Image (cartoon, rainbow, N blue to C red):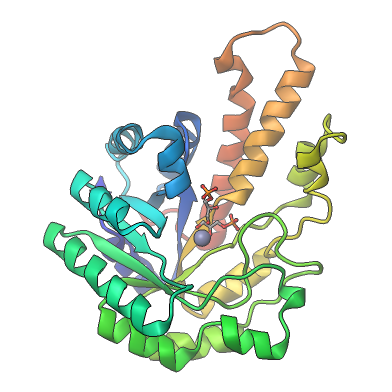
Length: 311
Ligand code: G3H
Ligand code: 13P
Ligand code: ZN
């Protein structure tokens, strides 16, 4: 059933687990995520980025997520990293039950002002709002101590921000990064900072850039395509280890965003199929291993996040 981010995260707060927010761009990924949520009896957040909307169209994405939400588990339809205020307004009017306003690169007062505007629009429609304070940067190794202070979330500032904006969830920066290259070595999340933020901020906390980038799936994805630029870019890819995700949940993270792991799994399946099956021209056959591997990633996350069995 379709629900709001506020409601789903209240359950997570009570049970001290996190809910996975999976980026969806096409039918097969929507099906992989919702089928797994049903099998695992897990609440789930299906999120679409502005890029996903540009690719698939908002109406198609909404229609697919509405069908997915007929499943007997709580489902949130969420806009990920909304930066375009008009698009956010449109998403709320069209029925998204949650939107993110990403003002993380704006000065504090501008971020507050724009977030407040989005909160007012969302409240009028009963939708939730995720906001962000602190910038989620690139390679952690390159972040010096002074840069940490500039980009990582400041606990007192986060508390003030959440209080004045009245957002429903807050994304913070504690050492994760978007994409497959999170760090040159194993990333180290700033759990001490997270604990301080959790003690001061009253709303549930969100972790972006949380993919694990499993070496096994990276190897599979690179199979058959060592010559391609795309695969060379996966060389040295490094994600957030499961143990650090567990520590982050213990310290208060309640929503965890996953995209890169789904992309890597989907692509691994597609490459393997195209190379090993020289006979089919049937897209349904070409995409079936992609869906299976995507489901395996989602299953693992639901177990790791502790959301399995909570629906
Ligand atoms: O954090 C962003 C997500 O990975 C979405 O990426 O904008 O390429 O869809 P995208
Ligand atoms: P990853 O690139 O680590 O999957 O992060 C996705 C994300 O934060 C989407 O908002
Ligand atoms: Zn993100």
